[in-house]
Amino acid sequence: QVQLVESGGGLVQAGGSLRLSCAASGSIFSLNAMGWYRQAPGKQRVLVASITIAESTNYADSVKGRFTISRDNAKNTVYLQMNSLKPEDTAVYFCNADVKTTLGIRRYWGQGTQVTVSS
Image 1: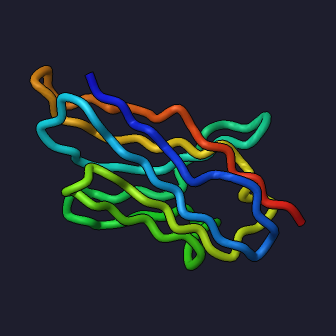
Image 2: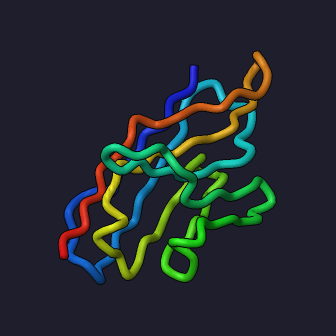
């Protein structure tokens, strides 16, 4: 069994910064691609950023130049550094990871962490 646990969300003023973390634990052979999604009230969950095992990154246009995704493979952790936050960044942020286990490769999700940006 694999678990992803996010941390680092909270309330911040516009222009501020937050750093989200997501740690994977359990029966993990390896972590392949990892990513962050967000879901605002009444909207669909959308990709924010992703990072491959080779550390190639991809960002939504709305966060390019403000957010940075990174990973620490030794700690099975993915991070999202969020700078110059805007009220429209307010959402629940979810991490995911493609995990190789004894049963093959499967995508796991964290429980989500709330980010609220006040104007």
